[in-house]
Amino acid sequence: MTTSVLKTIVTIAYIIICIALVIVVLMQEGKTSGLGAVSGAADTYWTKNKGRSSEGVLIKITRVLAALFVVLSVVLCTDWLG
Image 1 (cartoon, rainbow, N blue to C red):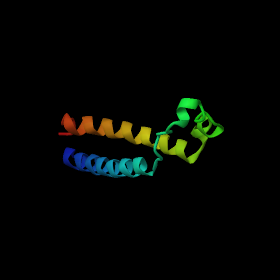
Image 2 (image 1 turned 30 degrees about the horizontal axis):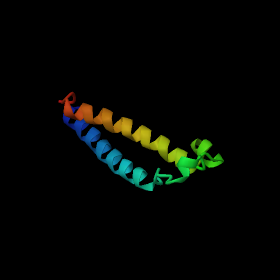
Image 3 (image 1 turned 30 degrees about the vertical axis):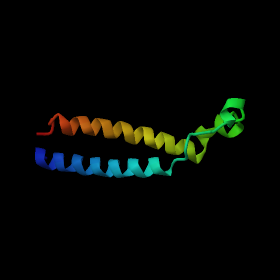
Image 4 (image 1 turned 90 degrees about the horizontal axis):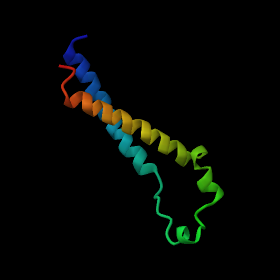
């Protein structure tokens, strides 16, 4: 593969990851718990097991997409592909 084809593929993957990251972040719920956090009411079964819920899955996907975003940003910025 030539470097221009490889750079084009990485750029397309970068754009797809950017769009997916925006969508996943917008799908997540807000993290503000209001005054319930002061009295300890926010410490419920839901908050202790949120890693197994759909919200936990969205958080894991966000972390993976963010890591890929940073790696591809460095690769495209440093001109390693030519």
